[in-house]
Image 1 (cartoon, helix red, strand yellow):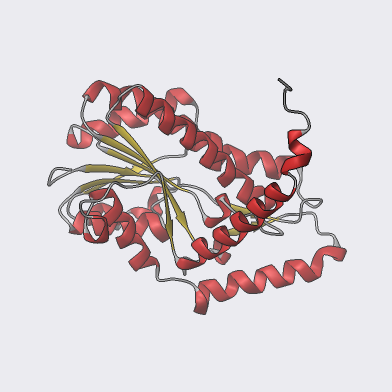
Image 2 (cartoon, helix red, strand yellow; image 1 turned 30 degrees about the vertical axis):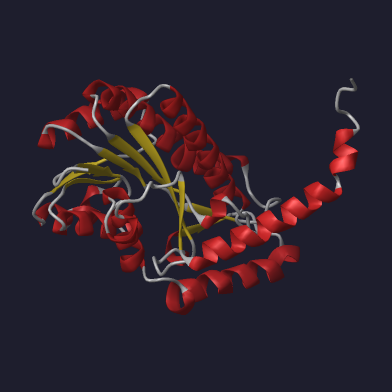
Length: 286
């Protein structure tokens, strides 16, 4: 990619979004940083190369279109979309309400998908290399107890953007899709969790166990979010370890993401192979 790019990043009030905006600006790139509550990112607006914008990804498609038009006017273009906005709704499967699940999907899935749908015609019209980067999670590959609502949204995003990647490649469009899958990081994840209003005591042991795990990631065992954000920037800019490499569709950030996923994939392959004769019974017979 050329020396100076324009990045549009959602969810920059904390965590990876905030760190990534600062890192990219420090590397000489321009950033449009967004947040649902703009007062939380006013300090970013004082940083060289960063413009801020209020954005609620759950707004209507028409409003999102107007927001994107405004964003493009800031620097005259946008080269990279980084879908980072989202939150975690926790609660065991039985505890979750219809409203909690729908709200989780409205933000994490439909908001992300709609914003991307707004950007796609613009990226096609520029006829230059563009990137659509979506931050999912290790939870987009492996689900966890008490996190079914959250991880299922990440599974959904993985499917949406894998499908989009195939469509863009088959159409020879210069738009690259990148899915970033972070493991556990110190990003105040536990502080941003929304707990289900409905609590069922029989699930307390597993809820306490998972809460302790997330707390440890946030305080002691989690990865360094600043370094993780630098790795994301390297992947987007093809710098550091990523220099000269073909960036894959999926890019895990953190060894724990790889370890959890590989363990699951190996078990899945073993089960599939064991049950292959059973599955094959329905195959057409010549």
